[in-house]
Length: 600
Image (cartoon, helix red, strand yellow):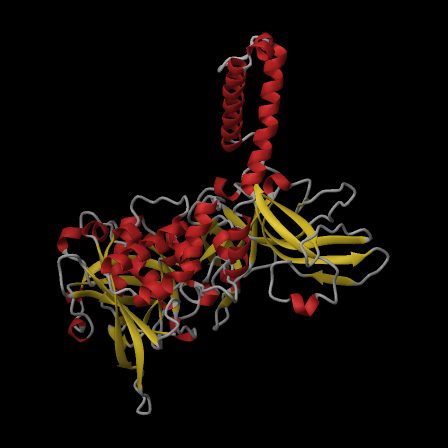
């Protein structure tokens, strides 16, 4: 049996108390206790010492179980309102899908749907499973060359690029001519180290609403302009990696995903592509807004820095648990996905609990005790289920237990029913042991030649489980009121820092900008006319002004972090019609970046 450090601390505390109180008792009652030989450090009688240590172990276990009940209320409330805040964060990675040239003859591309199931057979005898997180359209294209080149090399630079340099991405077709494919947009992944990837993201989105396509064979070009012409990827509801819930804002997912897998946001999409007239090769030219000669030595841009066919993947898979064993009476019953493989199968989320009466084929869905539908189901079921997750003893991660109660929260024991659950699982720490380049395989046939991991899967991140942490999360309930109403800059900064950093959990990236880098924050009421149609009127909105420290700009990820905050603040602004985030440098009054208006 594995004893964790917290249990050991409880034991030592109880043992110290018993010895000290025993010594005090011996001092006050020498006639009774002197023969027992009690002292503050030990007993001369080994049998007494054994009894004291045994009793200390028993009372420490009881005390810990008692203390563990304190966070139950806060954790349960969060589990109902914001389930993603208390659930573990599973391993995540970036994977690349290479299209099978023999299946790339379609002119409309090959689609890989979000949620496609992938796996790799490991040396532990169990498969490690993943799900894709973005919808992908694969084309028989390859990135032939990527480089930073002077804009002066193109005689049309004055009409689309006011900057000295452009990012040139050369695409090459593997089959038909480019003009034969109905390509309207392409999604790219920036595969580079932290500094280079974030610098490229900054160049793409600082002041950019244009790009050009150049046909080297005919020396012709097209210039594309407009809002969202160069689009951020990873911020929409359908692009979330972690599960979303109707009652909880998806902005919480964005913050968690940013700290757990920042590479998830290193994607961009070029829209309104037009390759008519192009043969087998075309150049995409994107203005580099903050590139100068001083960066040449430090920035190593290669062909592998930009990739097609990539998506985040998450270590998730759906499974049915073993039936619950009611032969032993207990307050909580273990819920196991597979008793033979539970070392590498961890229940992340219980999606449904099902009940069947022995001898009947009817399957009934049970409702949780803490839910919204007691009135609808009270007449249909005699009891509800209640879940709790605690640290596992014999494996890394958590264990899930289930109990059954009536409306008065009195324990119930199903007698003639078979109960099992549909759950979402992870492979515990197995995914984190995989290395970049690991080949993945589709559970169903895919139109690809191979799928491989680009980054090492992250480690699982678990809820600290303490009451203090839960109450920090509960404080998020007041964030919108404080942010919108706080006129004192110091108060607003404290609230914003706390609301952001609480999502870091035990994630720690020294090079990442976070809430501690915020120097100033303020909110202002604004009125804007949103949209260009003549019939549109004026709307009330909230303008957020945020200033980051100079050190955070040196990390080059202020652009990515502020992009996440742009969506994060939107979900706290229920009383206005839109939000607008402006980013400042500490010693400059001029706005560094204004993100496009976010409609509520």
